[in-house]
Figure 1 (cartoon, rainbow, N blue to C red):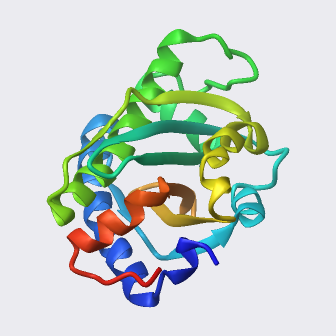
Figure 2 (figure 1 turned 180 degrees about the vertical axis):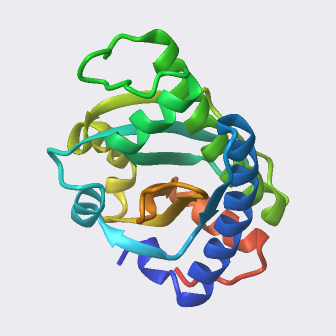
Length: 213
C-alpha cells in the first residue's frame, strides 16, 4: 500500500483548483511574453502509474521539451513540465522572432534554450506559487533545468526517489489555447508533481484535508 493510493477525488479536486489558479497566472504572464492572448486551463488531475507517466508524454522514446525543478521548503518534491517538441519550437520562434526555428537545425542556439527555460520557469513558478498560497507553506523552486531528450531519459531520475515508496505520480493535465491561431486543437502539456513521501501529508494537512495512511 503506498501513500499515493490514499488520494481521493476530494484531494484531486483541490489540486485541480490549485492548478487552475496557477494556470491563470501563467496565462497572463505568457500572453505578455508572447504578445498574444493565451488561455490555459487544467482539465484533469489524476494519479497514474510510472508506466502511464511515460505513455502520457508520448512514450519513453518520444523526444520532448522538459523543464525540471526541485521544490524546496516545507514540502520538498519534484516537478516536471513536459511540452510537445513542435509547440516548444513554435513558442521559441515567437520569443526570439524567428518563426522557422527548429531544434533539428539549431540545437545549440543558446538564446532559444534560454527562452524555453524562461517559459518553463513561468509555467512551473505560477503553479508552485498557487500551491504555496493555498497551503500557506513556504515553497520555492530551484533553478529550472531544461532538457530536450526522450521521455524515458528525462523523467526516470525524477521518479527514482519516489519509486522507493510508490509506483504512482500525480499528473496535472494542462491545455494551452492561443487566440487568433489557425491551429484548431489545444496544445496539451503535462505537469508531473512528485512530492517527497513526507510532503504529501504536509500539503494536505495544510489544506485541512485528512489523508489516511
